[in-house]
Amino acid sequence: MTDVTRTIKSVKSKNTVKIKAPIVEALEKAYENPTYQFHIPGHTKGNGTLPDFRKLIGKKALMVDTTDEFDGLGTLHPATGPIKEAQELAAKAFGAKKTFFLLNGSTAGNLAIAMGLTKKGQRILTNRNCHRSVLTGMIISGAEPLWLIPERFEDWGIWGNVSPESVEEQLKAHDDIAMVWITNPTYEGVVSDIKSISTICKRYNVPLIVDEAHACLWNFNKHLPTPALQLGADAVVHSLHKTGGSMSQSSMLHVAENSILDVDAIEKALKLLHTTSPSLMLLASLDAARANLESQRGKNQLARAVENAKYLRREIDTMEHIHHLKPDFGYKTDITKVFIKADGLSGKRLESILEIDFNIEVESASDAGLLILSNIGNSRNDIKYLAECLHKIDKTNYSDICYLENKKHMPMLTPIIKMNLRDSFYAEKETIPKSQAIGRIAAEVIAECPPGIAILLPGELITEAHLPYLQDYEFIEVIK
Ligand SMILES: Cc1ncc(COP(=O)(O)O)c(C=O)c1O
Image (cartoon, helix red, strand yellow):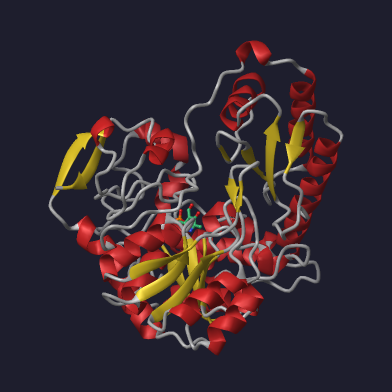
C-alpha cells in the first residue's frame, strides 16, 4: 500500500464512511501511472534537481510536484476536474456557497476581496489591527480604510475585540461605507461579537467580510467559538496552513450561502492574482486537510488540541510567576491559543529561554509575552514537556540574564492620517535616516510579521511614538 493510499484510508471515519479527497486520489493515480514527461516542471519528477535536495524532501514529493492541466488533475482557473470537486467538498464542510482554494495564503484571498469588490474612493470600515494584506488590497483598488480602533489590553500588550457599538457608530456617521471588514479572532485569539456586527451590517445593507485566517478549526469542534459563516458574514478567509493541517501558503476563501457579494468578481480577481502554475501538492494538501478535519481522526485530534490547551492552562494556574490570558478574561477567546507572560521577563526573553535551554519553539513573542498554539498535531506528551519546562522556568531566578526590552513588537498606535493611502504609496518618495523622519509622512507599509499589523502606512504622520517599533530600521521611505 502506498503512503497516499494509507492517507486516504486513514481519513475513513469510524463507521467506515470514506471521506473523499479528490485531488489526493487523482495525484495518487498520476503517481502510480507515470508518463514520459515533456512538460513543466522541468525537474521531471525530481531528476533535474540537486541530489541533496531530493534526498532531503524525498523523491516521492518531487514525483507529485506537478501543476494543473497535466495527468487529469483538472485546472484551478476555471476550477475543473478533481480541483473543482475538492473545492465543492470544502464549501460543504465549511458551510459555504462557494470555496476558492488559495495559493499565496489568505493574503491572496484578502487581495482578491479588495481588488474584486472595492473601488477607488470607497470607504472600508476595518480594524486598525488588520493584517497588512487587507491594506495591500486597498492600495491596489484605491479604497480607503476608515479605522475602527479596538480595545487595547495594555497589560498584555495585545489588541482586544471590535465592539458592535463602534461599528454602528461609524455606519451611522458615514453613509459611504462600502464594506465592513473585521479580523476575528485576533492573532492571540480574542473574539469579537460577529453576530451583533453582522446584524448591524445587514441593517445598513453593507457586506461583512471576516478575516478568519486564524480560525479554520472552529467549524469542527463545539468548544471553539462559532465561525463567522454561521453568524451572518458574507465571506471569510481561512489560513488552513496556519492551524488546519495543510502545507504552508495554502488557504481558502469561502463565500456565504446568502451572501450579497459578487462571487464572479472575486473569482476574476483571484485569476489575475494567482500564479498560472498552481502547485498540485499545495492544492492536494488543502483537500487532505479538509478531509482530515471532517474525519473522526481529525475530530479526535482537534478534541485533543482543546484538551491539551486546557491541561496547559491548568498547569500554568499552579505557577507563581507565569500567567496566561485566561479564556474567560472578560472576552471570548479561542482556548487553543495560549498567550503567556512571565514576571520579570519579556516575552522575547522567555522565548529564547524556551528555545535555547529546552529546544521549544513557540508561535511568536513580543515585549510583553508569547503565544503558544495547541495544535491538532501535538501529542499530550508534547504539551506535558512544555508544561514541565515552564514549571522549571517558574522556579528559576533569571534576574542575572534579564534585560530591558526596548523594542516594541505589537503596534497599538492610533494613526494620524495626512494623505490618502494609495496616492501616498504611488507619490514621489525619498528615503531618509530614521532620525530625520519624525514629522514626515510615511510612504511605505511598515508591518512586521508576525503579526503583520501596521506600524505605519503610506499617508500617516511619523511621530516619536513610532520609534520603539522601528528599532530595526535605519532608513524610512517618506513622501518627498
Ligand atoms: C489576520 C490575518 N489575516 C491574513 C493573514 C495572511 O495569511 P497568510 O499568511 O495565509 O497569507 C494573516 C497572517 O498572519 C493574519 O494574521
